[in-house]
Image (cartoon, rainbow, N blue to C red; front, side):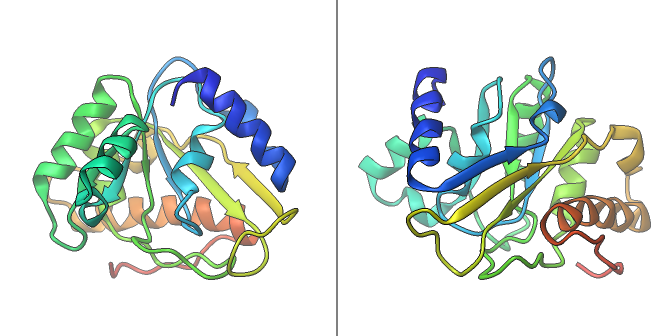
Length: 204
């Protein structure tokens, strides 16, 4: 998002909601990171770009690209399409390439929006991308009460400390390491949203 537009949108959020950002000092400035967050609303990708200083790309379900006009609009915001549940290695490789080029990339590991401040189990794709790219993971938590954002809702974006690549390394073909890395990432998000780490097993 253009820095000027980001500044304007951030101001609008402060006007429309009781909006605050916690942990903005944790945002790396020199390299791209994989931003992993819980998912509450369709506007989450825009929200997550506000504290960032480098260009941000984010995954969006391919259905959103059916309308050419809307598709062009969200592409301008940094969106690129994915097929949910398809295990598309092309998407994973493209995402890894974006990270290696220095972009920030947003991913919602749960794969779907949640109706409350609870974090789902998440999928291993987030760990696979982190492992293949060698990028740090920046956990974020989107917190507000109720199912939908309304005027003057208290909305908080919490930013955790980056998880360094060595803590979530995934050797080729190591399923246990993949699940352990996913659990580490999801626990960091859950702590930001719910205040307690998630007790996660090894299933996807």
